[in-house]
Length: 250
Length: 250
Ligand SMILES: NC(=O)c1ccc[n+]([C@@H]2O[C@H](COP(=O)([O-])OP(=O)(O)OC[C@H]3O[C@@H](n4cnc5c(N)ncnc54)[C@H](O)[C@@H]3O)[C@@H](O)[C@H]2O)c1
Ligand SMILES: NC(=O)c1ccc[n+]([C@@H]2O[C@H](COP(=O)([O-])OP(=O)(O)OC[C@H]3O[C@@H](n4cnc5c(N)ncnc54)[C@H](O)[C@@H]3O)[C@@H](O)[C@H]2O)c1
Image 1: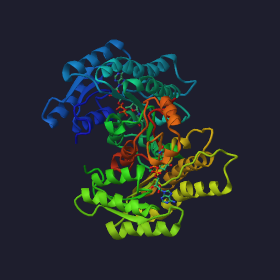
Image 2: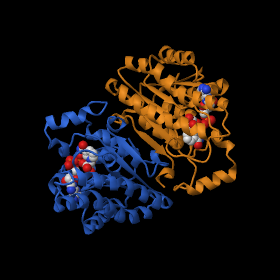
Image 3: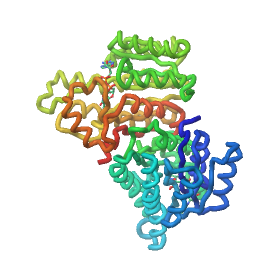
Image 4: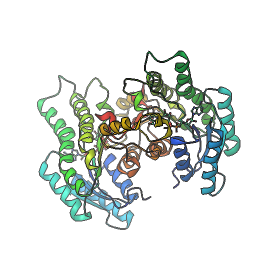
């Protein structure tokens, strides 16, 4: 229950879905959490629910658009002001876009790349100095199995998630000397609002491609992130953690 | 403390090194453990030490040469007889040498392949039916970073560790529907007796290319194996996990 005791985490896109599951698990393991999202009302509600359950002020919501450097600066400041520092960053915010190479507009391309890729870079850029002050930290970047394999559509999404995979390794190599570990997580099909936009008929064939033949609950990714965030993973950096029910093993 | 409560684990090569670290950690997390090794005395000492620390009968040592089917059958039976079943198999036993391609004799080749590769297959072959009886399980195969990248020597070793990587994925795909998860772990340079054969200056030079600038400990790997053995990784199968201080990220 104390796997993250004393640590402070910043989770982008923590209002709902996987980010919210991580916020709940982190607090359950003794961390304090700043939830950053563009969905202000939902983020505030998630933080409130966590605090009610914890019986203490363990979670705070801040407005964070991951594409804006100023928002990141504020979010990192909030970690220091509210909880005294920053140890863990989960770059989880992301958007899905199904269009293939030809049917992606420049506008759609830029928005996917900005949120999923530039957002991850900016998050690290502003979190690293704060972690350095604490003598180290752990950064977890949420990529996707779509950062490892291709599919008939989702061109910009694939590109952004592939970028996150290597951005992670480059940051891991660069910041190992500062005792900051950086790893990527690659979820398969996870039952969150992101995939619940699709109908069950669209989803089922994809789900069936995974040997486990089921989608995952957000907590099943959340526990992987807890592991990487904790000191249990002290020799793990620059690595990829796939959580896909065997999808990419086929 | 209870992350493996009620589970029974079989660990090959558990007398010393990483396997022993896993046995200790598993028992501390509530599992009962059968340690199989060719080093009978050391296996018994390790089991005794665990039992002295745990309240009650938590560990048993058994003679297991991983190249012998009859030994595996007896080891799995021991899990059932002593502790009522089998939930977790760690295929950890292995041998290492630095011999290059042309200098490798057929005898050396066969020995390395039998232990590191055939041993892993046999372990799974005899563990799966026992896991099926429990409605599922988790198999963790210890490969190496040598199963991901090459080097100037250790030819047979590279071959076997690469084989374990794909054998893992094949088994994950085959047994996913039966809720048996199968994953591989890829340690980097880990300070155990195995690498005593590498001269000290060379080890120091290796450490300089590891981004975290240190050798790993057996416990560093054991905590990863614990994660994969536990239900925290319930949607994780067919995947590979490096514990290498960032070595393969460079
Ligand atoms: N659900 C899946 O099957 C799946 C699979 C692989 C990877 N992922 C990745 O997991 C991560 C989490 O997604 P999820 O499944 O929880 O989906 P989700 O849509 O429920 O959550 C995404 C969150 O990110 C937030 N967000 C979007 N744009 C933002 C921005 N500019 N600034 C700040 N926050 C923003 C959203 O408001 C939302 O709260 C994403 O990076 C996604 O790409 C999801
Ligand atoms: N130490 C490293 O740097 C390193 C790096 C990558 C991978 N590995 C792998 O990790 C695993 C554990 O190695 P370690 O570092 O703990 O080394 P180790 O030599 O201390 O332990 C290996 C154990 O396997 C046992 N073993 C050998 N042959 C056996 C057989 N035929 N049947 C049963 N048991 C047998 C040995 O008796 C010993 O107890 C091995 O598979 C090894 O290849 C080690």
